[in-house]
Length: 312
Ligand code: MLT
Image (cartoon, rainbow, N blue to C red; front, side):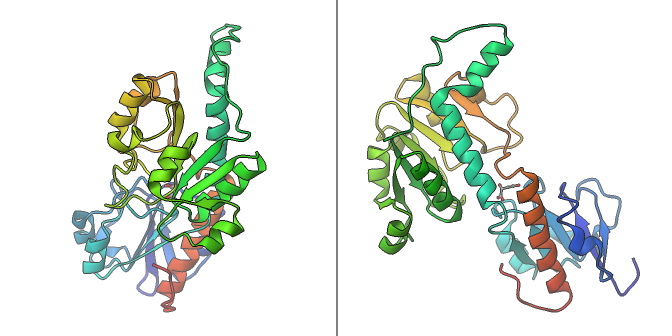
C-alpha cells in the first residue's frame, strides 16, 4: 500500500456487502486474511476488523505498533483485551445494534424448538422412525419467561414472547419501571426470575459479574422442570453445573448457542437428548452480518479520516 493510504486487515469472514464502505474507499487498502495466517507485515496494519473468531491479546497488539483502531463486527468485545488495547492507544469500536433482531429471533426459535422437541423429532425421522410418544412438548401460552439482561436483545425477545401470550419477568440492574411498563414486562429481582420462570434466558455481556451467574446454586433455586437458554455468551452459565442439573432431572432442557470455549465440538451438553445446541449462529443471518460489517466499516473509516466520534 502507498504511504497515503491506511491498511485495514479484515481478519474474520465478513459480509461482502457490509464491507462496501471500506472496499470502495480510496483512503484504505484492504487485506482479507486471518491475523494468525497472514503473510502481510502486521506492523503495517492501521485498522483491524474482526468478528468473534479472532482473539486480540497483548501479544498480538505488540506485533501491531501501527494499529489505531479495532472494529468488532458484532456486539461482544470479550475477545479483545480492552485494558491492553487502551494501553496501546488503540480504540475499540463495535456494532451494538446490527444483530439485535437476528439474535432475538434465534433465541425465540430456540425457545419454541425446545418446548416442542423439534430438533429431536426431526432427528428421529431422519433415522427412519415414527415416534410420536417421545416428543410430547409444552405450550408457551401462559408460561413465564425470565429474561436476565434487558437490553436491546432482551427487550426484542420480550415482545416476541408477549405475542405468544407468555408472561415476561425481567431482571436488569438498569431496568427502570418506565421501560418495563413500555415492554409489558415485570421488573423483578434476579432471585425472583429464578423462582418464577418456566423458561430462563440470559442476554447480558460476559463480565466478571456475569461469569458463572447461573452456577449450580442458582440453577437449583429455579422451578423444577425449568428450561434454560443461552444465546448470549458462553460462561454466563456454568456448563458443568447445567449438565448436572439436567441429568439429575431438575432442569428439563436447555438451548445453547454459545460456549465457554469455542469451537465446542463434541461438547458434553450436545450429547444430552434434552439439550439443543447451535454453533454460535444467533447473529448469522445475511441481514445482521451486512448490518454489523457496514456499521464497523463506517466507524473505522470515520476514525481513520479524522472524525473522532466512534462509540467505543
Ligand atoms: C456478537 O457479539 O455480536 C455475536 O456473538 C455475534 C458474533 O460473534 O458474530
